Every structure is written in structure tokens, then in C-alpha cells.
Length: 244
Image: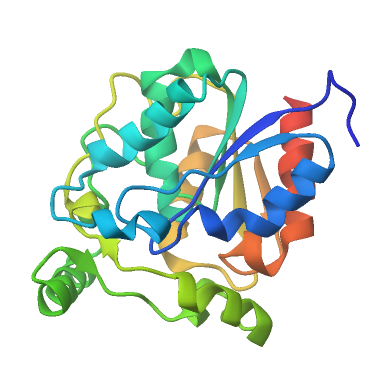
């Protein structure tokens, strides 16, 4: 267990269809080691799925994280974004850099000012997802993907994840991330890529951080590393945070 000087405050942000619940295993490990760990859920997902609406934009997702940091009065935060959670942590880093010690992108989206997630996808895939949203919910949400698409194949892991997934507010994909500075806003940033199997939508983020010279680590597990390899994920998050 770390001593008081080594303990960190981790804020762990989930991705598409997930909620703060997905970090449960990693959070338990980090807390047992003496760290403070918070796992906010974005508006319209998880236990906040009753708030789902077409008014949930990228700005709302960013405000979720910014307001969490402010209302919990958090400082020197290690802010971790999994998958699409990379976008709101980038927005938070732009808005309240004074509260953040470092950023960690776990197979995360790495977006720049003015970009939308649909704009970064191949046009045919973006069109298919917009069509799925229209057909399933009248354009409010993207229907849930199978757990196998996140690299979750163990029956116990699948039984944990599948019942907790919720449709994702689709307008977050078509509204832009607004930044005043560069991605990461000059804060120490580290990228973790999940390699077994690799997750297709995370390829662009990995390419961008390599081009930018960010440090990159690998986890030999699937995209939902916090579920499929919680100990290895917690170890790596802690190591990156302590090295900063």
C-alpha cells in the first residue's frame, strides 16, 4: 500500500454504453492500496439512463466531468478515459487544467478541437450507426453492441457486463468537442493500447499519440481491460501515475 505521499486521486471515466460501474474491479484494487478513486457516470447511461434524451451533446459529457471535479473539489487528479471517455477527459483538461495532474487514455479516443466522432469514422460506418439509432430509438440513442465486440469473452465477465450496458446518447457522436488549446492542454499524458484483441475504433487515437510522441504502454487484453484484466490495469494505472 502506498504511503500518504504516494497516494493518488483517480477519476475513471467510462466509454460508450458503459457507466461508472465498469470500473468496479479496478477501483476496488486501487482503493485497497490507499488511493482515492471516483467513477462518475455520464448523463444518460448506467444509473443515469433515465435521463437519456436527444439533448445530450458532447458539451454535456464534458460538463459531467468538469462539474464532478469541481463539486467534489478534486485536485491533482489522475484523469483516466476509457474508449470514448477519452473525449470528455480531453474537454475537462481544456477547461480545468489546474485540477488535473495527468491524463491517461485507456484505448481511448483522442480528438482535436471541432471534431466529431462520427466525422472521424468512415462515412459508411457513421451512416450505419445513425441509421441504427433512428430505427431503434428515433435518433436518440445507439443500440447496445454485443459484449464480444469489447473483447469480453469469459462467461463470468460477460455476465457482469451485458446486463449493465445501456443505449448510448447518439448526439454525443455528432456534436463537436470544443477546445481552446491543444489536445491534452500540455498536461502529462500517457496512452494505453489494448492488444489482445486490438479494438478497431481505437486505432486512430493510437496513431495520433505516437505521432505526437506521447508515451505508450500495452495491455495484452481486450478493449474492456478494466473488466477482463483488472489487476494488470490497476497495476499499470498506478505505475503511470506514480511515475508522473
